[in-house]
Length: 245
Image 1 (cartoon, one colour):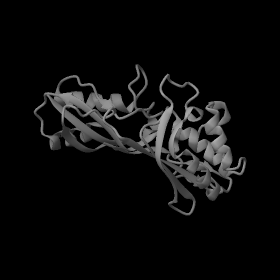
Image 2: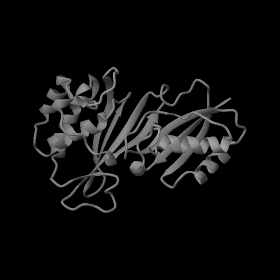
Image 3: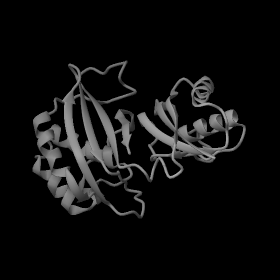
Image 4: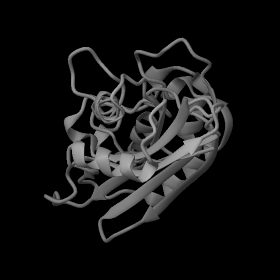
């Protein structure tokens, strides 16, 4: 048996997230079906983590076990010929049997894009959150520093939270202007809770609009209660950028 690792890019607009569901179209099921067709047997595709409906990926990682003899170059070419245009396999490699795309991961990096202008963009509307109001980027940067380190992130967990340990270690946060009206929020952590990045982003935008001071984010974190944070940021601005092993 071979353990084959895929790196995947996808536009999540037309998918109900990564994870396979009984009826809805998902990225995992779409890729898994194409892999099974090429290797001529059923496979189980494991992803590095789930992404929500509408969330995109520049570097999702998945792996599967198969006894196929097909060479990796042909596998990549075959998959990209079968997959829809909004999913691309960017790399294929064979790994040690101990490798697991989720459990072997050491960190994950997400990007979130905000289009900050009085006018919407027809080109970036699928890939960013349009904020009309001017944003205080300095206040947002100051507030975000509170989150770096090992904390209980219950306040930024999805309302339909899972029974998991809410402690995560945020290793890096940064803001970067990438255009006249576009800025990028980057966050890297050992792992993330459900909706964690979008909930953090929603609260940072709340501060950027001047509705709360930067110190408020520390109060929210310490409350360990989702109801104290701001509304969840929309999915379309979020990208899984990279998974590190």
